[in-house]
Length: 113
Length: 113
DNA sequence: TGCAGTAGTTTCATAAAATGAACCATGGAG
DNA sequence: CTCCATGGTTCATTTTATGAAACTACTGCA
Image (cartoon, rainbow over all chains, first blue to last red; front, side, top):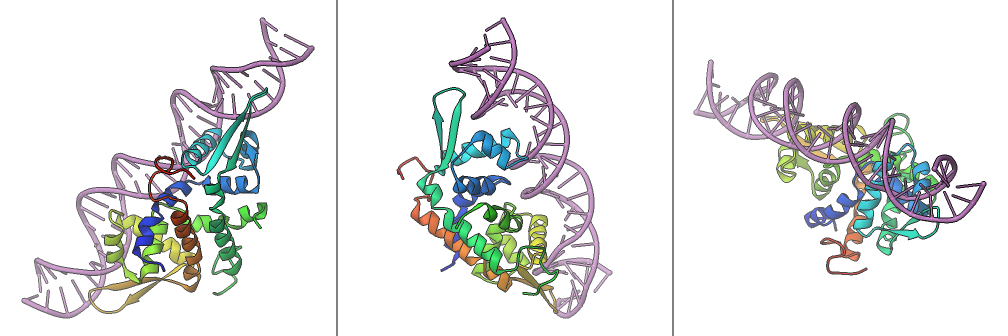
C-alpha cells in the first residue's frame, strides 16, 4: 500500500501544510468559521503578516475561502472549503497516533514502547 | 470529534514532522530499511548535514532506530520503530486526500471542486 | 474634523533551516 | 603507507520563515 509513488504523490500536500502555523490555523478553522481578528487572538503570538501569508496560500490552494461582508466596520470570515474539510481524516489520524503512542510528554522519559 | 483540545494534543507530533525533509525521509524508510548513503541518493539533493540532523531527531523521538553492523566498510541501517510504523495511517490519509481531491496538479486550473 | 473598529499592508530586522564544500575516522586490500 | 568505501562532521553561507512596528483603507458617528 505504501510504495515509492506515494512519496511523490503527497508532495503537493506537504507544500500546502508547510509552515509553523499552517496546521494550527487549519485546526482553528475546523473548530469553526473565524474572522481575522479572532484567528489572531487564538493563534497568539502569530504576527499579522504571517497570518495573512498563510491565509492567502491556503485560499490560493483552494483549502479555505475568504468571504467579505459589506458593512462597517469591515467584516471578513474564513472557513474551509469542501476540499479543506476533506483534510480532517489526516488530523484525526494524527490525533489517534498521539493517543496511542504515549506522546503526551517527552519520549523515553517514563514509558517504554 | 475535532475540538480545540485536538490542537494542543497534536503539537508534539507537528514538532516531529517538522522540516522540509522529514516526511520524505520517513516515507523512504517505510518503503524499506535503508543505509545512510542510499537515503542520501534517494533524497538527492539533500545535504549530508541535514540528513544527519533529521535522522538524529527522529531517532531521539523514538520514531526510527539506527543499527550499526560491525565489519568493513562501516555499515549502518535505519528503520522505523513500532511507534514509527504507527505513523503510516497518517500518510495513508494524506495519500487518500491527494487522490480524492484532484491534487495531482495545481488547483483551480482545470478542475472545479 | 477626527476618532473608533476591523482588516489588513509595508518595511525592515531577526531567527531558523538548509546548503555546499571540504574534511575526518575506520580498517582491510594492494 | 596509500587507496577505497561508508558514514559521517565542521564551518561558512544562503535561503526561508517569522517577527515587530508602523502605517493604510473604509465609513458611520459625535
